[in-house]
Image 1: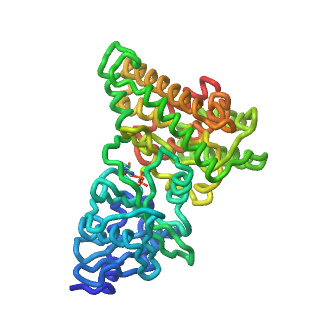
Image 2: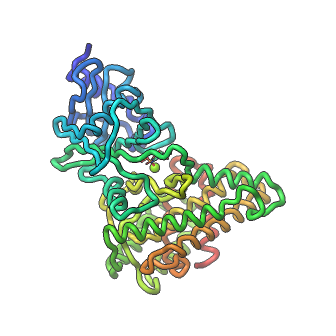
Image 3: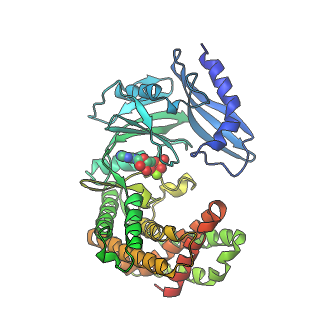
Length: 443
Ligand SMILES: Nc1ncnc2c1ncn2[C@@H]1O[C@H](COP(=O)(O)OP(=O)(O)O)[C@@H](O)[C@H]1O
Ligand SMILES: [Mg+2]
């Protein structure tokens, strides 16, 4: 039998080699130069040993805290693959336990059974989620930021105003990091019959491509009705967020800052991706035009990383999940008040991706390219129309804010150019052809 102290020592030694192989590890671009224990909390002292661990991962000049569960039961560092041990976490939440600095807590009025086993979700993730029975999903945040996590803060606020488009938050785990109370995990209602939006949308695209001469509105898998309902759901969540946490008018400084940030991102990306060069003047002009939005710009809390992989279709309608914001962005940006049209732009980009991903590797097929564009246009229009139908008056119809929406969409596409260049160079044509199209068409 290992004792907890020896286990932590062993795990710390293994982490530099193990971390870079984990999907959720955010620092794959450079080597791990050191790992140091920040906090360790013994959850089981023996048989099997289970230790909650927060480590600081050092990579040359960068440092970031990560959460781990260490055990002597499974090979390699991490206990989240062990269904029995995972059960322990839900039990602790069910009992509102406190162990050391860790606080396990149910949301008010929630009852949770004990004795359930937790199986890890296998889809690609930036965190690690465990599913218990058919009712509970516990997300362990991997890279930690001191303070409350926006995922929990925003969904709690939405729950309080009775939002129908989220999975109900049921509990949380809080630790202490840099002397601040820090959300390390969130428990939510699991929706067992849900299909994610990306899977639905790409199936529809494939149906259309297989149909030869038919148009998008003629084939069985037409997605436009779903896209429209999704637009309504997103607009409703925005209205609920504004009700719960307020909204305000952007002042000249806010607008200046956001236009400058778009320009700076463009500078950074074009410095390493020469393929973007021809579009720079048109992109700059588009960002400048965002200053002149008639009727002003409303800012509020938003989702911040909205795309088809962050929405679930249930028998009752669409749910939005994962309100953490862009995982790579600093917390100040993730919690800032921003225009809800950023989320609309994110979803519009995602429709474009769903349509064009089948073309990667076969750029010469003109017929498929026409189909992809047709699918994208139809579903983007349906989504925007649905959004306009349900939008709060202050936010209004995104089509009336053409320059602003266009700038946000282009800004997102510039981000995608950098991402694809670094990770999937054969996909670079997807954002680049969108940039060519959007800047060519005008607002
Ligand atoms: N409430 C839920 N019900 C059913 N499945 C869910 C639920 N929440 C998340 N999932 C599944 O888990 C995946 C990851 O969840 P997400 O919150 O996006 O985590 P991450 O922060 O790791 O991206 C989702 O893509 C979805 O497939
Ligand atoms: Mg996600």
